[in-house]
Structure formats: C-alpha cells, structure tokens
Length: 112
Image (cartoon, one colour):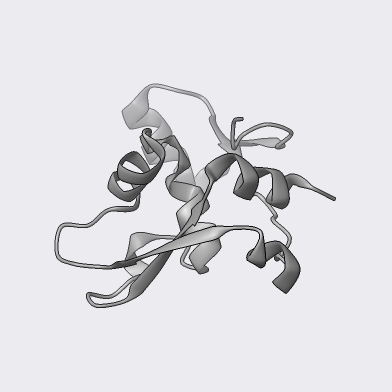
C-alpha cells in the first residue's frame, strides 16, 4: 500500500518559489496533498499490539520503520500513530508507540 494512493497532486508555480525552480531547472514543482487520517477508536486501538520505544539521540522515524516493519516506507505510520508529523516534534526521552501488525494498522486507518 502506498501512502500516496488517492492523493491530489498540486502544481506549485507561485512566484515565491521561482528561485528554487530556477535552481532545479524546472517550471513547476508538484506536491502531494497532505493525507487525512481518521483517529482510531479505543476498540480499534485494542486490536493492535504496540511496542514502546524511547527516543534517543540518532533515532529517526525511517529507522524505526525499518526495524519494526522491515522497510523504511512506513515511517509516516509511526508519525501518524504518535501524532508527531516530523522528527522535530519528538524530544529525547519521548515514548514512541509502534503499532503492530502493520497490515492491521494500515487497514484500520484506511477504513471509512
């Protein structure tokens, strides 16, 4: 499952980004729309196992994704599950919850 599935793509041609586009040699920059996930219910949370990881120096979401899911692709699942959209939102010592199994967590977040 791709995190980009069913997402709108926006073309950025705004003047404020002209210098960046010139550096890249492009006329536009395409952006995926920010995904919208619904919050899991308490019942749905109970369907998942959670591994708790204490954030330390050198940790990265993609590294945790690789460690627990076998691929770096699902770093965003850990970010979403913890309500921490980027690593800059995580401090040393924070407890990061890793939802398992991955396929169940993905299925729960995709249900309407």
